[in-house]
Image 1: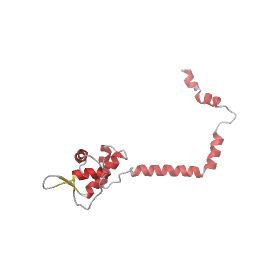
Image 2: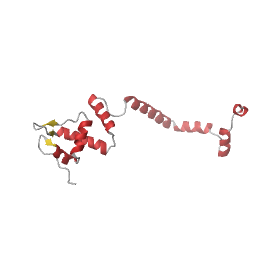
Image 3: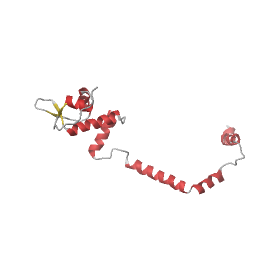
Image 4: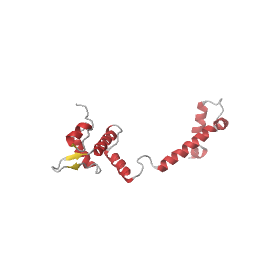
Length: 148
């Protein structure tokens, strides 16, 4: 396959030229036009598709997201819908805030680690008790269960 052509100083590019630049078959470019409403190249007077630089950059971004980042067509549509609406395309803010507070709690626990370790050692079974004895105690049925 021939190497991808670089952008020239042209204002518009026909679909064959865009195909060479993006290393995508024209059929894929036409398919993406039908899938992504925001991807609409202009039409020349002769009704041929003509792409400007911005549209070609959009095609290259779609290609990268689908082929390199693993987006699905539906996921990519959702991403672009949010992007056009001005919403952040990443993780919801509430989720970020929750994760941030959970991480802060972990950091606080680690900062108090010596006290935490003392508390854990104080409540843990004695080291003389074997793991088998610990298993029996935790698995042993209650009196209520045995009465059944």
